[in-house]
Amino acid sequence: MKENNLTFLWKLFKPYTHFMLLAILGGIIESLAMAGIVFIIKNIIDDVFIAKDLTSLKLVVVAIIGIAFFKQLGFFMRDFLYPLAIFKVIKKIRADIYNRLLNAEPSFFITNNLGDILSRITNDLEAFTKTVRLLSVNLITQIFTVIAMIIVLIYRDWQLFLIFLLSVPFLAVSLNYFGNKRKKYSQRLRESFAEFTQIVNQILSGIEVVKLFDKKIFIRLFEKINNKLYHRQKKDSFYETIYLAVVEFIAYLATAAIIFYGGYRIINGNLTTGEFFSFLGGVVILINSLQVLQRGAVQIKALNPIVDRIKYLLNIPLEEDKGIEFTGLKEAVIYKDVYLKIKDQNILNGINLKINAKEKLGIVGLTGSGKSTMVKILPALVKNYDGEVYLDNNELKDYKISSLRKKIGMVSQDVFIFNDTVRNNLLIAKPDATDEELIQALKKAKADFVFKLEKGLDTVLGEKGSRLSGGERQRLSIARIFLKKPDILIIDEGTSALDVKTEEEVIKNIFTEFENHTVLMITHRLKILEKTQRIIVIDKGKIVEEGTKDQLISKKGIFYRFITISGEKITE
Ligand SMILES: Nc1ncnc2c1ncn2[C@@H]1O[C@H](COP(=O)(O)OP(=O)(O)O)[C@@H](O)[C@H]1O
Ligand SMILES: [Mg+2]
Image (cartoon, rainbow, N blue to C red; front, side, top):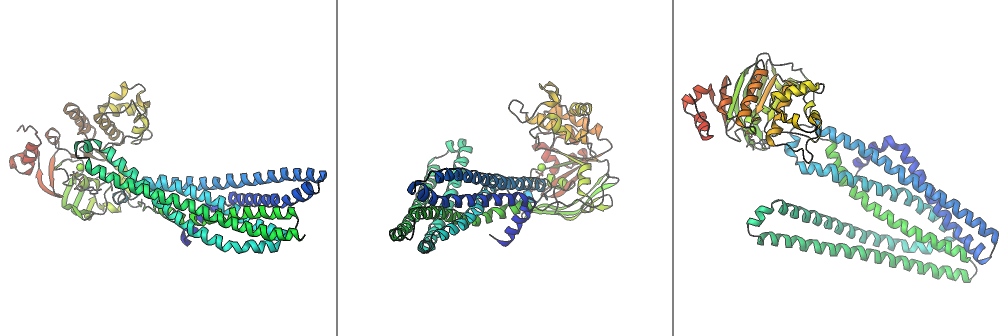
């Protein structure tokens, strides 16, 4: 276990020390009870079976029941309280990670793959719980059991114990050697399984393409992985069995040695039959405990990478939320020589732009030209740009991020609807909105379909039977901005899934509602663009044309070509 991982775990578990101490106490009680049982074997054999004494029989039975009670009490304390502490820790880790993810720097999601994040949250936390739980069982009880057994064995016959000790090094070496091998191959087997699932998954999700092309390649690919999986299963199984076989053989050798020397001492009258069997029982339990401890030691090493991965999630960089409060745009937004690179690719190449407060600005450009990136800078969804972006007199980075996001609203092509009621899906825009406000917003967004849903606002979305069409989802996301009423509104192709007639009506409502607000409208619909005061054309991260619709059309430049290509009717 790495030092810093130990400190990390210690900090996590510290609040629950009382649970852990009780669990350890439970482990001690359990081990003492085990020792008691081993100890009493002597009395059962010598006093009851051999001496045939009825009083001893009654005493022994009462003692067994008493010991059994304490043993199970200890077991309960250990096996319930220790996991409870783990569950509490995990609950807190889950909450911390969730919180981290909600407040993470946006760039985190560019450099990290969503699947990997999800796997860390689910698989790694599960593995952590399992491993820590196993360790608790192993370490706490087994350590005390080993100590208790050694004491009983020495008390019974220290010479016999020395004989037993001779076998321990052999046992330890083989436990370690085969244990490590086993561990290595079971790890490889798990990797193979993951690989196997991945390829089946991949092929099934592209089954239509697979069917339309030559299957030979896919079959060969599969055969290779299937073979590998088989070989690893074989190896894994081999080392698992040989491990058990060797360990058991050594255990038998030790037992033989004990029987030989113990028998010799019984024959000479130095040891009673009861003492001998009591000793033998102790040895069996001791070997078992050592074996479990060895496995625990391997698992501790396995815990390191898991802890590392969890720590990564708990250290996700957070956005800082401090600075000047943005209360709304008074004069203008100014982009000054704004450049931006994502993964070595130049996305923005020197944007210079002044958008006046309350202006309605149209933005046009080919897919991938950088329109979305440019506007996402305003609500700080895209950050590390070079150059400056001013909102009135202050640079964007000097504003408090939450205040920017409160005042800047965006509807984009990707609509986010989460699995909850229509009401909750709308309330994220304005948590204290009344039903009347929700209804008004839905009407303005032409989302009247909600009123026809069986449960209206209380309809749960995202479940079977209540799946919405793309256009319906988009209307809900537009309804949100009528509720939020941002000071600066960005529509990033946010009405593209609507039919032409609905789109026009919705856009009309937006222009009325946001008459006194700043609106940036990314679209290629001429009907919408003509309602704006000015249009800019973006190409390869740069503004290449600028003017009113009529100016740009008569210029017959990029804008003109773009509009004609996209099949818009030009009415001059
Ligand atoms: N998170 C990202 N990771 C990698 N590349 C990105 C990311 N976001 C945008 N890009 C790239 O930046 C370019 C501009 O994207 P975008 O601003 O969405 O263009 P537009 O909105 O004009 O279609 C594209 O080439 C796109 O692939
Ligand atoms: Mg875009």
